[in-house]
Image (cartoon, rainbow over all chains, first blue to last red):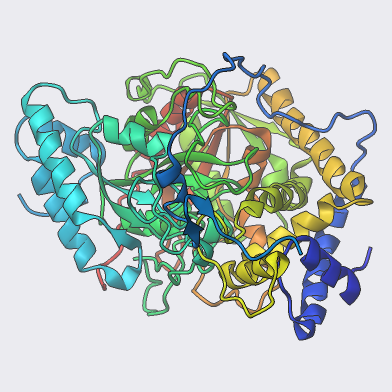
Length: 95
Length: 495
């Protein structure tokens, strides 16, 4: 599987990372190096092997479904790059 | 008493209990060492005032007879741990200025035990790297130099600042985190001890996530005994991390008898790589002989899927990273890029993430995005998770056959020079983790112990791999190895 520039651009878009047009060839090449390395996994016979979901077999603990925290608006907003009137502020989202 | 900063945790604790020193004296000694060690770029946020306040409180506790093992002992904290009111950036530009409103469970436990935080330590951005060169603060620099060569060396990564600080005696010990070898590789590069416990031993709550199914915190120390003391203070069940194990935490230090008579130590043939440097092969053979002389039975074993651990890791870790790091969007915390008129929310995300993340982090997020994308999920991600099952089974089979611990090198070489890997492709840097990453995939505990130096005088380490939840037994084997190796080399002070 070889990645071309348009695939690299698509991946950058999906990852929401701006990559300038002239940086795409080098990025595609890096992807190909890494994916070439990963291709080794195709040598392994994985028939009938379950994909791992939890490395230490354990049941998730249950807890009571109740409010245990909250009313911390000030702390929640304290590190926001732009907070106004008790909200996170972002550029206009709807036209 | 001078040079208190050069003490280990156990020695300092014993002096405190005998009233022969105070936490304030220990802390002042470390703060002075830190102040004169900016050349190492290990401490990136210093907290001297908080440290002295906590030291005074610790002295009061000791005087009152309430002194847990870590009480009054000054330590450094990797920047990946959220510490309330103290900048915590995981060495990323995207989290510049981030001051958490909460404290990570591990650092809270250390604080409750009376440990004194001296400041935050350099690391690779979001713990992605093996040289500490991927840091918004610039590289941390090893206190070690090759004999007759002034080249700056890497302390390893991602916990490079922690390793440099402990090796240079800027603190008594430090916290690290290990996703693919980030505690053990820097420990090996700097002649220090580092243990990654079993997945689930330490709570991950409040630790900036990289790859959640692999990340574990652990101590980086000057001796195996110190690692046992600090690990006990760091681990334990936490309701805030659903993967944290609800198991009793043993007194690890009490398990250090040094008696490994009759223990079966496995030597995995797949770890003997083609082209392994003679220094590493010799170190491994010597370590094997030491354990044998101490009464252990040496058994050749096979871990047939070892070769596939690194490629499986470089699917699973980026996949989880791409998901975990989606939260850095320029809205809730950290930096937002400067926007132009007319830029909408998509431009805000894209510009913020392009400006805020370093090159390696961007690379891993995008690789992760690719392997999780429609059409490739099965071919890459699910296949890697299947291979992970097989890698874990390799170890289970070895343990089922009666093996108590496995001995292997920690790294394929000694520390390299800063910038020496700059022109290499990313995969070459990834090979640093070839011996360490298998344990993260299998969730097993592993400890790096310094056992020798190479021809240029640089420290080299061996790694012991243990059964799940048996850190105490593993540390005891490490203790026996440490006693036999008698590693005492220290870097000459040049900074």
